[in-house]
Length: 311
Image (cartoon, rainbow, N blue to C red; front, top):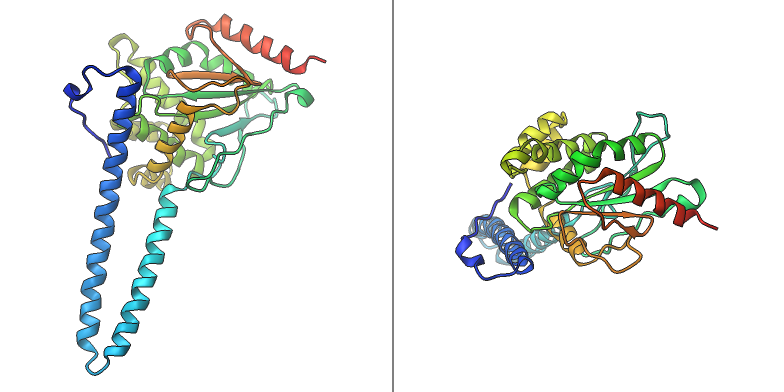
């Protein structure tokens, strides 16, 4: 999991938004640098192999040139395919979020399966069904490394999950790197691995990530990329998920999805961006109350349901 260390002196005098943009750009440059190194190694290996082929084919210069040309074309195709793979989002997160529903039996949670978002494509929106089913659609945009997320989830996480298993709400989980930090980007990418490869364990991984901040609230400790191995253990990650997380498989998507969320949230009726560690949207309405007030959140959800089903 790639990390970028930033000299704090470089951040002096910047506003919060400027610091977030700076750190996000540094992380992007580091990923691009590593990608260039990988491409250069592959090109060097191909060049060495091509030289051997040309030398070995005595009197076959034309054939050697054709072979080298074919190899170059094949390598270019592989490069394009690798770039597309790197930019592609996780399966089951076509909206940049993982949608969870329940039949209302009090225990079963079912992730909704979707395709993967191609790099550069616009995320889709899950359709609201509240007007026809009475199930309130709730979207959570959460930076799992933020203290705000720990406060919110310790206060209302259990209530929201109970409402989910009761069939009263659907939850769409959007992990974001609201700060643009390397730790947050790694956490978002790791959640993407669960969503794609082990979606039934994604909610457990979400809880495990936020529990670290809840447990460390007294000392100001929140989730870091170093905690992800423990998260994977807690959520009983499969070997495929572990390899996915360790390989930074969804690093580019994590950055792109976070940038989209901090620019605009498509589910909000009024123009809204994820400007803090937690943004809650319910049937188009955005929660503006305190994150440590469960009663205020419950009142908001009730009002959102009433508004959405009126008439």
